[in-house]
Structures are given as structure tokens and as C-alpha cells.
Image 1 (cartoon, rainbow, N blue to C red):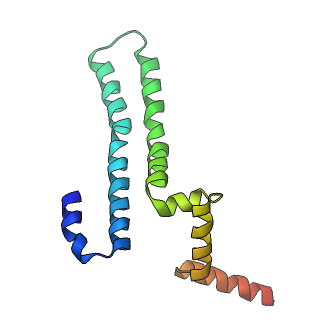
Image 2 (tube, rainbow, N blue to C red; image 1 turned 135 degrees about the horizontal axis):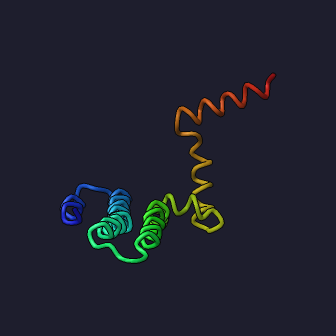
Image 3 (cartoon, rainbow, N blue to C red; image 1 turned 90 degrees about the vertical axis):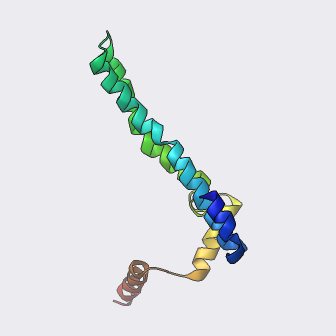
Length: 125
């Protein structure tokens, strides 16, 4: 995927290329968190094939590890994707710049537009 991105970099602007690189880094990071969800389930199944004392407690620990997958995946997305990082880390300079840019651009979705319009109409009544 990286080779394809490098080959198509000639036709992309610098900002777009950086966004694609960031997305690729985020995707690779998310793939790297996959073993957190898969390996514990393999270990749990292995306790059925090869039973041992304490297998129940071992299974509990493996289930606890599996539940951390979504949290770790969210952290990977936050720290590898600049827009999410700026939004979540609102106390940093990057977050402040991101908020100012978002405020200047105004609402971008129909839901936001509808909510803003309804809030304005409610203030009139």
C-alpha cells in the first residue's frame, strides 16, 4: 500500500499525501492491535484441548485482555491520526488551532446545521 501511495504521490498535493500517509500509519497501527483480540481466544480454546488446573482463572484473564482491544485501538487511532489527536488533546496548541479552524469553518453537517437552526429558533420564542 505504501508503494502505491508513493507511486501516486506525483498526482497528489502535499497536504493530501500527508493525510494519506497518516491514514496508512493509523491503519497499520490498528492491524497491530488485532492480536490483542485474537490470541486470547486461541489461548482459551487451547484450555479446552489441554486442560490444566487454573484454566478457569486463566480464561478470565484472557477475556479481560480481549476487552482491552477496543480501548487500545481507540488510543492508536487518537495518537496516529492528527485530526483526532487535535480534537482529543484540546489543551495542547495543536488542539487549540484545530478548534479555531473548525469554528471558523462553521457547521459542516446537516445535523449540525439543523441543531444550530433549532437552537436559534428556540431563542426567539
